[in-house]
Image (cartoon, rainbow, N blue to C red; front, side, top):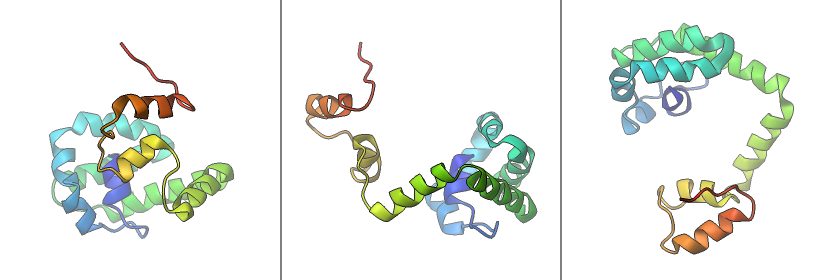
Length: 132
């Protein structure tokens, strides 16, 4: 569901075919409709529209009105929570992540650096680290 929203949907509610293909969004939605349903629960009043869009995308089509409804809901959330919106803008403008976890995801190809213990010590400075 979140790959559909973040990678597969343009701001105008249309499909981002490049993102849909690159992230295998349609295949993932078709393989896990229950996961999509559960993820849609995080979307409040946009849940039903997101599910309609996900079902249509999984079947190879596209439901632009449904995806526009989700975009509209997201816009209203941004207006209601301006501090979150400003944090996102700052993150995008900064260019590189300052969080070691985000850096590993975005800059290291989703790989933990070779010095695992050192990386975990770095994380422990501002993250709760769980270990066995």
